[in-house]
Image 1 (cartoon, rainbow, N blue to C red):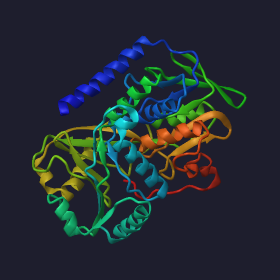
Image 2: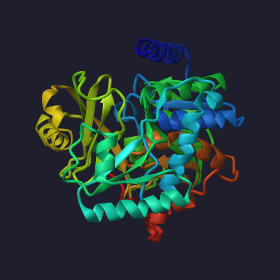
Image 3: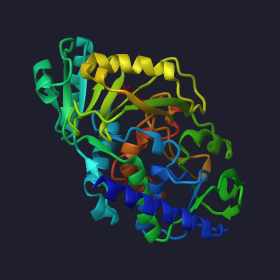
Image 4: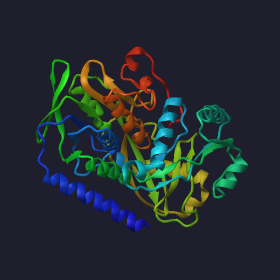
Length: 406
């Protein structure tokens, strides 16, 4: 199964590279999506599925999804601290669960659940409040005692825990597989993807989008979608829009194959210390945000910080002392001041659409966001009301803060 999956992903990547090399950059399009990660690929699919023709996606890297998307942990959760984030992820889970029926492309979505654990009673109270909100939205979340947590993950240390929450419909998927699947489906609808094509400018006619200038030529277009991830701020500056999105490094480490823990376990989030862990390729994947991290495009792996991550992981899963770290990598979060995405139109620039600032949740929200952004572009009623995620909220002083981030 794993070999078959890897072969399928390789074939998709090879096909995309081959097509990108053959295609000469179009000089006109109805829409240009800047960014070929999972957000850009999802928007391209849903927009083309709605019947929009002549859509172009440009990606500055050689492979789609090879920047932030391909370096993320692949988690898909619905347990958030705000209704809007919860709703977006609930809609995404519906799409992940029915991915082949919707796109025609298969993916593997492993719904092993997310287990949030709390060492502090204050944190547990926070979990209970969130769980009540989740249940009001129809999400099946369970509040667990330390004893119930021990039953679910017998290999975990629960002696210092106050409790936790668990949602079985949460899980994880391969970010690269999902990106390539969205891109394959979009290509079948006529979308053209160009790799190694970088946006270097955007032209305006008055306050209207008129063209995207790239390192390979110019594309005349009335519509640009900024799906540039950690580079979104730079793209926005091209139309004199100040976007409050900053890139922050996030690091992940993975052990060698490790049989002492079952192959399928929930994503365990030790909330008070910030470490998250799950099985991946037989090993244990673990990560944590560095509180001293400064913004910037930094993909250097800090092996000293790995020690901090491992220490926290060992406290929760003591048997990890028998495992060896195999490798580590660094990716980028695109973070906003309130840890919520910025979605929709920009009032001062006609034809400029934002899909940015996911603050570490872009992969899990990508299916819903692709669908909603396509609806916004077509002036349709959106599946979910995302007006509170509008660009203007920052100037209006109406930010909405997400507390369940790690």
